[in-house]
Amino acid sequence: MVQPIANTLVESQALYLDPAIRDWVLIPIMIVMVLVGVLRDQVTILLGANTFKKPGLKAIRETKALQRGTVLRLYGNNIPPPSFHARKIYLSSAFERGTFLKNPAAANQPVNPMTDPQGMEMMMEGMKKNMAMIIPQTIIMAWVNFFFSGFVLIKLPFPLTLRFKSMLQRGVETPDMDVTWVSSLSWYFLNLFGLRSIFTLLLGEDNAADGMRDMQSMAAMGGAAPGQPQDFHKLFLAERENLELTPHEWELEDVEYRLLVKYGKRTEGEYQLYKKSLIEDVVAASENATSLQENKLKTRRKGGGKRD
Image 1 (cartoon, rainbow, N blue to C red):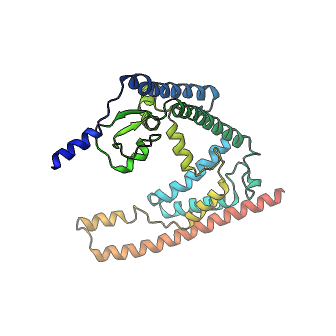
Image 2 (image 1 turned 135 degrees about the horizontal axis):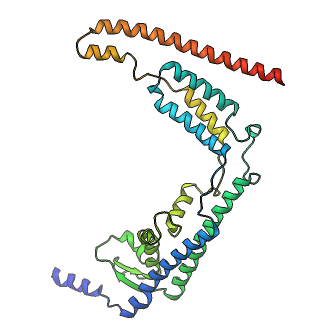
Image 3 (image 1 turned 90 degrees about the vertical axis):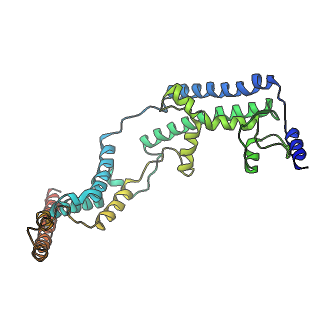
């Protein structure tokens, strides 16, 4: 009794598609999307929205100074304590004063991209890329929805759950249809997600034809304006706080005694005595380095005041 019912359900889901649907709906939608992607890449290149513009020297200095603080925090244990503390004091004071900023006078002012020529240029490039992405996809979706609405194009060769029904059968109001059937509008979305490898094969890795990459970047920005400039003054202050909280443990500290203890040439008690004396020497050296650096900064400030 169960077998005839199962056969009846299978036969009720068997649909015979006209081969003209494959020739005039399925393949044309995919070809049009590929051609529009190639055209979009060429238009983006002509608009200059995908070209790299060399930043200025001051902008490079801002970025490299921030990286310098990060490198000191991550790999500072590879240099001796006096060298680490000297760099730490220098970078902390420079970050606080805004020495590495492009415009130190506007350090405490909010960043306004409308008054920054570079920020305006970045915003215009972002708008060009977004327009080159939104307009073609909107036209293709309207074309598919108007001319091919309600078409069932293909059947997937693997089973799916009912959660995929709303995604694969957009525009087909048939609650009893099997989930594996794909409508024309859903075929458009599948091509939108799945043509990335074809665009990479035709246009290379760095292409502007992949609309999903731009959509993901916009979602990652949280809807922020494209090309929004960064406030490096706040970044420098945050990096200064991170430097102040970073401890230092020299990797090569008492390495010779550790080797001697490891191979049995020294005892553990002798190693502890040596380590205690070494810590006292390190503390004294770091205090001397700190005082010398502070004296240098005071001398520079006095010299600058006298010049004024």
